[in-house]
Amino acid sequence: MRPIHGNILTPAGFVQGEIAFTPAGRIASITGSPIDTASVRDSGLPLVLPGFIDLHVHGGAGHDIMEGGDAVQHVTRLHARHGTTALLATTMTAPLADLESAFSALGAVCAQRPPGAARVLGVHLEGPYISEAKLGAQPPFARPVSHAEINALHALAPIRLITLAPEVGGNLDMIAALCADGYRVQLGHTTGSYEDGVAALQQGATGFTHLFNAMSALHHREPGMVGAALAHARFAEIIPDLLHVHPGAIRTALRAIPCLYCVTDSTSAAGMPDGEYSLGRHKVFKCMGGVRLADGTLAGSTLAMDQALRNLVDSVGLDLADASHRVSTFAADHMGWTDRGRLVADAWADVVVLNRDLALQAVYVEGESISLG
Image (cartoon, rainbow, N blue to C red):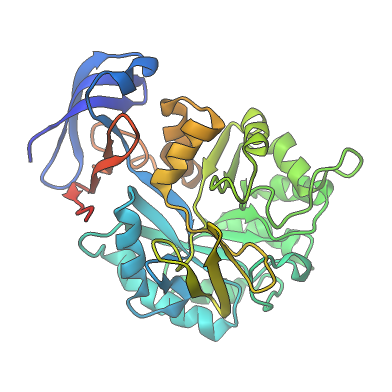
């Protein structure tokens, strides 16, 4: 294909030039002259950024990852049309049989990306190793960590990220072993104290799941899990739909957590009209711009990553380069993926092209042009 011309975000900053791909779907070269970030949206040229990476995706297009079958293909095609080039399929707290069914369907997609879809780089196991007192929208099947259960699921599809509550019996003592096995561990759906959070980080946990949501809050005499994140974390995920977290709280987290990155926590309701949808064993309702259980509890989102980028720039006030890092690069850094989330030679050709209003004009997943229609 022909090189893409525009203002291209490289690790050193924006350059005005062109980016070329190899036939194998890698970046062949980037050439151009530096241009100041403040000028890129007014230059008249397209904006070329790394493809978005979403480490927390439950569904979309009317399909839920826990359905199994071909649900993940519908989900990944929807999110690719919104600029997500790589993601972690995220499961719910559920009985083992339900998880095995979902994982059985995910294995083949992790091994071979379907055409027109985002790359599934593995699974985010969000629960079942969480607190019964902080389920949020998770179904009531919480239990302590089982290494044997994790290994059995991992044999079906690769687990990359595990959310757990460190205060649940035995969980804290399992973190080091899970990390030694190559899993990333995040803290979430937790009533744990500040001290529990610090102890978990010392054992090898590296992040926090949807910061502020479904975790013990910050108080000046009881800092809670939020306090542990703000005081000590390098990485944490946050949902910037402006419904889960106020922009002021996002700004607070940005000042404290160097590599705060964005996730959608999207559900089957993403990309769909208002109505009733599934989230694991729960029925959820899309209404008033969000997704809720029948009792009004927020239950994931309908956010897509292109809107997350716009929210960071237009509502939170970040410059475009910083916002881009938080929807792609920092998530890749957290997972140790050096060939995604950045536009450099030999990295995967995961690219989004936007206009000055940050509306998507083109998406490339490993060099494949994705239809946005």
